[in-house]
Image 1 (tube, rainbow, N blue to C red):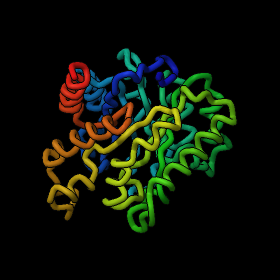
Image 2: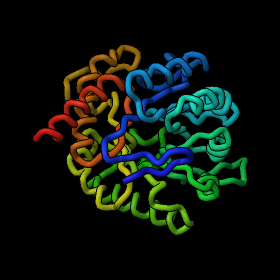
Image 3: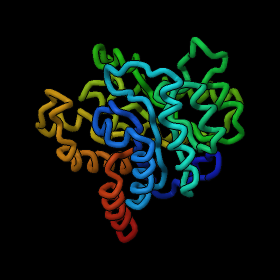
Length: 290
């Protein structure tokens, strides 16, 4: 299987590591660390040295409770970083839901649109829709994620009931609609949306049942890195983001990435690239020699 993107056909015969570049001051786990353009650019290069296959650049936090960022501010944060990243020789993904930002980064040569809204967000100030931007681009990749409600309300009133049938139904409808508009299957990736409006129990149910997504025939992405559900099951306090030590989430994050790959994920989106790459190398060796 290949994931077709603007400049690259990504070979998914082995799992790929997508390195997170948060060009934001307020992301829940590393907000502020790469907020300046120069710091974010340097982080891109560091992640590639650590073994990242794909870079994922975001200018707006979608943590629980996050407020919407004006388009102009998001463009100011991401465009210089994308302009640099597309020169580094790897696929560049941009984590955005705004059609204006999508169009701008694709015009710069970005390869993938990674949208937590699955192209559903509607701008009140632009006639362009996210679906139109992706549909009209000849070959960009797109990742459609399941999110219950929105970042402001998703953890205030999370999903109820059996989670996988609801996620499957949403992703099936979203992908079928996009394909009906002429977007080729090879361009589409799906993401069950760990932590986006789900309870701890539902997140781990999705991990255990993730293989149910594979028969849909699309690339599957998993984003477990540093999620609060990992802290919840490892006994770490969730009292305050300000007091969290993200090193406490390293081993659980890498473990979840490995389990996701074993359950069919083709791409894992992570902060800790070096450690995840090392762990996947061990998994790959076991499969090769067993």
